[in-house]
Image 1 (tube, one colour):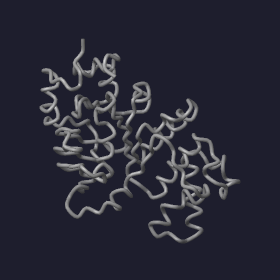
Image 2 (cartoon, rainbow, N blue to C red):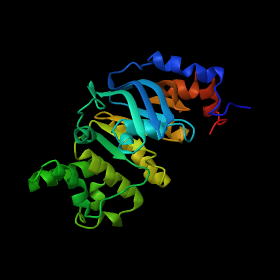
Image 3 (cartoon, rainbow, N blue to C red):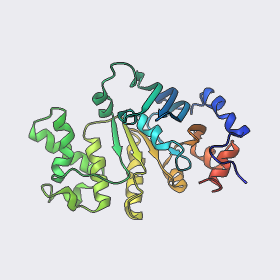
Image 4 (tube, rainbow, N blue to C red):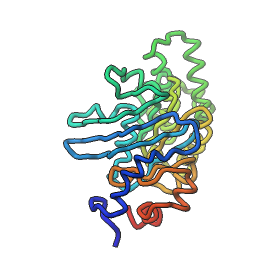
Length: 277
């Protein structure tokens, strides 16, 4: 018999102390989360989160359904506090800038974050215009520059050779795997610092999934990548670090092989073995 997420055991009572300890992998932190608490309609969803997320690495957020994984991801680009009934307390620092400080400019913050959702959402326009959309929004009008951006980013996601002869055709005609790569290219076109992925391969076939995973591994040399995934095999394949979330708290945070192969916490052990889902 294993503890239900709503039941406070000795293990769960110790989670706040673990968070306060500020477990930090040996790497340069790009994002620092300090004393983060999120309340939605009065419910305490994220509890005393303290993390330092390394630069130029892939960090996966894992945990049971409803544990707060996606909420944690959305705090990083200010999407969670867009909704009514949401209260966010604490700090999220990106390169030392607190994105929740009074007066923080949300558009500037989101420009730093490329987001891949569960399902690709290409804009209802051409392949070219999908990639050029962000740079245009931010003021780029030079056609030669825009063409260079489009080609570069489509090459970066391995899509250029597949679409270079039909750049003016509708993006919605692409396969779902191609659409997800296009959405990644669209995100990269605004020169973000961070790529966020929310179950970004859950709607893809195995070949497209492998393509996206390989792209993310290649891109980490230039970006900090943070993924929410419910697939432990995927977390093991692509991640340098793992954050295990349980009942809105950080149970364990460390290098992938340590968390998945030699977890220190009993709750993590149960989850990795499949006893908690």
